[in-house]
Image 1 (cartoon, rainbow, N blue to C red):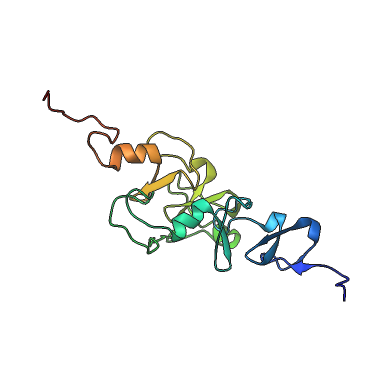
Image 2: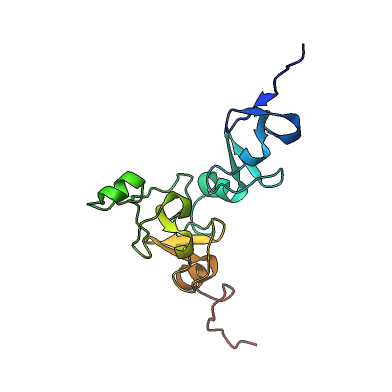
Length: 181
């Protein structure tokens, strides 16, 4: 018997998905506009999606959340671990009534101004303005695929490797060599 009134339900918004706008992933249906990464909200397609149980992510966010951790994986120096990093977010001691009422109590670590939802980017466990989400050393604009953090500060991968990565020959740094011939 035909289903007169619609199609399947979208796994993200639970509204009806009609055939012309349907994308399927792991046996579930999505609207094209709902087929986005749960972490960074970027649009996905069949080449960029990575699913974990009932959640969908871009490959970059999936790797950050469920991939290996440790030096060489964009998480800084240290032993490899599969545990997600633990961050502590400190809220201001006395947020204003206006900020509390309108959700602006989060403060950007770079400029110390209120960060509202429409302009918020998360990095190093803290909310940042999109315009403040830059490398602390070279000022390059960052995104979820290019950001690394150390001690609560943001760096591009190049600056992080130059300043905190391993030193020696073959690692992008000069080293003393023997003149044996």
